[in-house]
Amino acid sequence: MATIWLFGDDVDTDQIVPGRYAPYMNSEAELAKYPFIEARPEFAQEVQPGDIIVAGTNFGCGSSREYAPRALTAVGVAAIIAPSFARIFYRNALNLGLRLFEIDIRDQVADRRQVELDLARPALLVDGQWIELPSPPGWLREAWDEGGIIQYYLKHGRLPLEEDA
Amino acid sequence: MSNEALTLSEQILSHAMGRPVRAGDLVIVEVDRCMSHDSLTPEVIDSFRNELKAERVYDPDRIAIMIDHVAPAASVATADAQVLVRQWAREQGIRQFYDVGYGVCHVVMIEEGLVSPGEIAFGTDSHANAYGAVGAFGTGVGSRDMALTMATGRNWLRVPETIRVDVRGRFRPGVVPKDLSLYLCGLLGLDGARYQTVEFHGLDWLDLDGRETLCSMTTELGAKAGIIPPTGPAAAGWDVPEWLVVQEGAAYARTIVVDLDELTPQVARPYATDNVAPIAEVGEVPVDMVFIGTCTNGRLSDLQAAARILDGQHVAPHVRLLVIPASHRILAEATADGTLATLLAAGATLGTPGCGPCIGRHMGVIGAGEVCLSTGNRNFRGRMGSPDGRVYLASAETAAVTALAGVITDPTGL
Image (cartoon, rainbow over all chains, first blue to last red; front, side, top):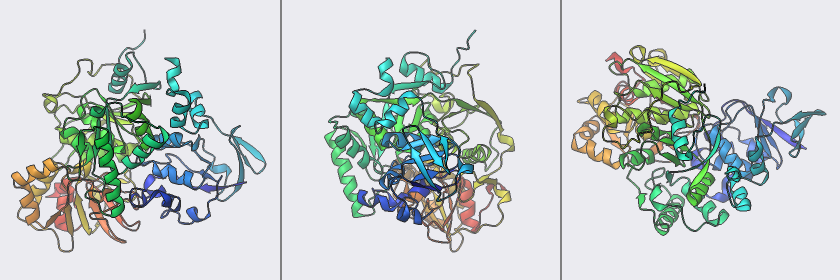
């Protein structure tokens, strides 16, 4: 089972990891202590590997800081489900293999609800009902499944779209 | 008959691809310019070396490294990270290395001519949209994207749709490009241009400083890029490729018309850049600090505008006025023309050219309960220091009159 952590619209990267908690300012080893350190201090203390963030529109807006999604992977967040994501956050999450699903399910879950995530399907089991989660277009999903764009490049020796070139 | 006309973004990406591409296409492009700063470069290096096992960057002369986010180093941790960045840049033969004090990365990129019209430029910074000021396609990426780009010279993009902003008229006295940017933030919201380009028209008369403000602030709309056609007096002498011209009939996702004659000074209130109102409507907001600086509004024209307002006067009691010129060149010019002396006489204090407290790390962060009026670009909770501090965003003109009055003040009321 996984726990849902519910957030609102426009969750910005300064909320996810404020600039002064960057690895540059402290150390890489401490990053897992900092997700939502000010916006929601109990998150980093209580989140468990496999937990899921459900949020509103434009999740991850703001800075290019990759350490924002990386702080979420550092504590084991398995997926983020939101109607839309800010563009750099989306790229960074892809590059880290952090799964994002673009769908609004805020009305179907509650904060701290226990659910089950089936990444292969992909779908979310809430109160005995499966909610199908939309997959990104072909190569994006493939890159995601392989752990990110860099892992994809290392495995295939080329970038995703270059197979068609 | 199909419409052949392309937006500026489509033109730049089509040129890079050697074939016409359209909004929505996924493409792999060769990246003309890479900019990476001290805040993310240590992570870029880690990924480049340890994940990609790369040895050499694709072309050291297409890469610029800047030390601006914590400059000079504020701690042993940041000093150590900067040692790593300097060593790596040397090892890679990157000559476009701008150390502590040169200034904010985007401003230096444009000042030094490191990005040109029609180029594709990636920066490890969301405000890389600023390069649209010279007619380039500038966009922000994270550290792994940058590592991959530095190693291979290429990366993927989705060709963005474009929002066209048709600007009519001229700014009234005391109203400036920052007010237009904030107005658009209020109008469109934090994700109003998500995955899209914002293309400005009707601004041939606008100077480069104003173009930089407008393009960099498109980031706050969620835009992938912001771009102004490289035409008009500001573009005189630029090497504009002949294929980069506004094409009548290009397809825009939407068109917004703004009449500058109607525009009034705007302010973004805590804690979002789209929480915008005309200053006349914000009521009496006392400030503890006024910050004039950043890639958005720390240029010479901003300092000069503030100096004209502050000339012969002194900032209000209990108000700190922090001025951080966006670059060393701007600092030198402001020193030479007397701007700096005027600001100092009015009670300003000075920081090293760079990002200053904009990211809340050093050199003037605010404490709990404090209010700052900043000429920067972001006011999310905790952005500039304490999560219990409050940041308002406005122009340098508004900043200067606010510093004098001690409360947020409309500069057109003078």
